[in-house]
Image (tube, rainbow, N blue to C red; front, side):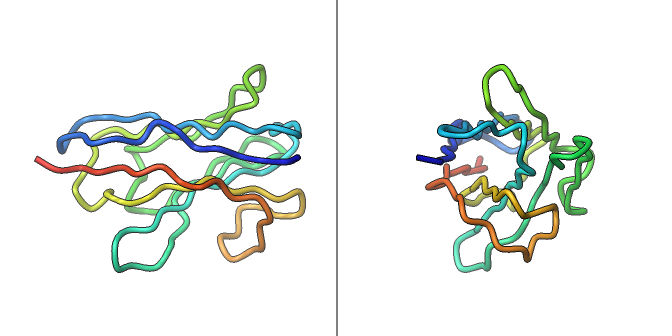
Length: 123
């Protein structure tokens, strides 16, 4: 069964860091483009970052550029989102998502979503 599962969320103070993990099971994550999304309370879900299957190109929304880094560890079948200099506005449930046919267009359909991991940035 194809699944992705997020981990690594938590409560941190502004300026601190977290690393989120997206572990794949039942398939080889390296063959898929993987995206991170987030949904803050009362807001719509938004795409945050994406790593391409074809050449590992990476994409970020403007608000996280220079602070977040997406990467893969093929040996662990995992995609990471390193989040530095966290801000209160980064507070959200973070989801990873993938689909064999999806690229880094946030609006593309993705079949496989994790259950999310909560990131809270607060002093």
